Length: 118
Image 1 (tube, rainbow, N blue to C red):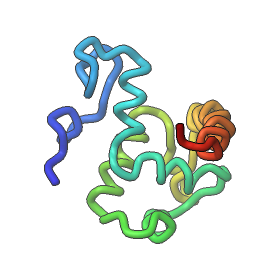
Image 2 (cartoon, one colour):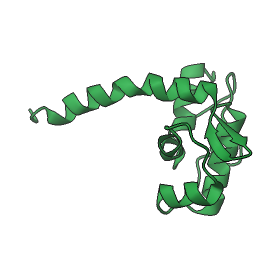
Image 3 (spheres, rainbow, N blue to C red):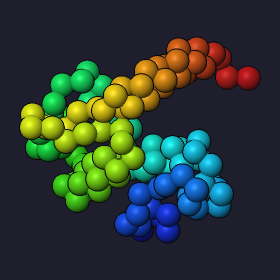
């Protein structure tokens, strides 16, 4: 699979073109970042706030290649969502806020998945 042009080798930034937006509005930049392979899984595995080494994170993520994980970690660090500390990778303050902001989606998706199909 070939990475999209916006994904190949660059971190989405506010004001720059991203998938779905040439203007680079902040919400579109975030959705591009979170829509990249394994990005949400990395956030999920770091959600409890403890530091996790690269190898631990790779194991927890269940099958992500080292190169893709390295790319996601670089992008998420550049975006300020995660930090590399002496005890491994962990969510930054902004990353913790982001995970908290995503939590209501779980309530919505649970209701949505329980609804019978029309």
